[in-house]
Length: 479
Image 1: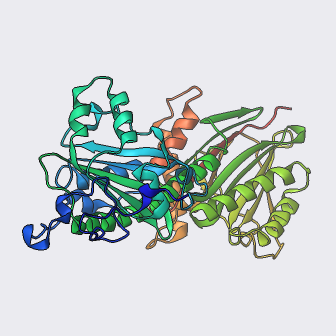
Image 2: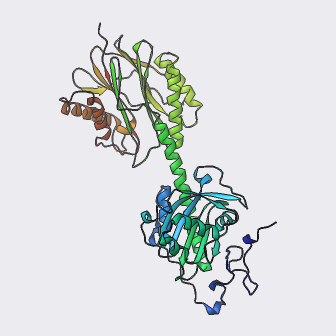
Image 3: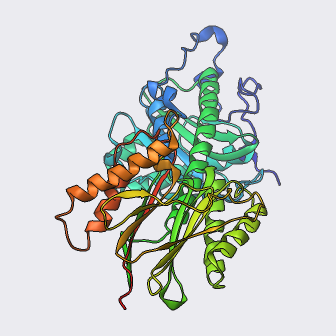
């Protein structure tokens, strides 16, 4: 049998509310039912300037706060924003036309001009609440239509009184003349709702005001969806970045390695740079720095796939050239990995040799016993991965004395208005100056400190790309 509470309430005159099929009231008599001549023209809805900021942030909680501050206290005495918990977690948000219960996450709350902290104990932000079928919240979510009432429903009143534990402010909050629940619609999907109240000393919400809140909520739904998507991509990218070698320094026999990465732009974590350090049979060490073209989750996923492939191929104990050749073939079949670059290095301390293979990557730098840093003259620069050429050549250096090898991504040397060779020479000069200034520093922190200094050193680069750096102290084995 149909639930009568979901039908529009008729006035004593036998006519439905002005916004037919859109609003519901739990009292048939309301000032909204007065004859048009008996009430003044409704004022233009007054939203706070915070309404103009909607969509300016990609933070979910901040976007919710902007919405409640746009509504309170200029338009409503209290406002709150709830998101469907399933939608917030990235699951199917379809509740159906008649949900038996709804789980919603309280995203934001504002009561008058009070600070949120004053209500946090009773109505904490982040709390997940279950709303039964008969509540206006479930009706708004199921129908996709605003619900207008003259007072709180029984479920809300009981829940607020229980949360207040005798706090007098709760009873003041319950004295409302108008209670409005507006669904947050994203296309044909309802992702949550906005609840607004006006106290007994205020005029009830009018149809034009309900329509204005619906329009504001439609804007907010898009902003919330953008923030949720960005947050999900950011967490994914952070998880991928956290899979890179951790710690500022790695120690091996005859080799110490410091590494780090600085994302491009403020609070940007999604990119294609990667690095890795692998122990190989016979005391060898493999080092790699690579760059999958672009930013965003596609570049991050391509980076993760290439890095995983290098680890698998290195376990086959094949030659450096063969490893890069197979990596090129794999990149051809990997979405987003075409035009990725890398430089792969094998350090054999017993043989005192360093083997390098480049795939379109900037040349490594080497600082030898003479105290000067210079680019390594590669036998062949190689083409980027994913082109399917399969033609790469090894450069083999003899390292009879301790040396410092520098691998880096193009974010440290590329600039729109500068020659790349000039930028590489500038980086070499910066390294020499930094080593000279820190020559008195000893201990385990010297190499990580040098890495941090180079990563954050001022440069002519535009800062539009990630910066990745790997420093390897190569110490030949004795005998």
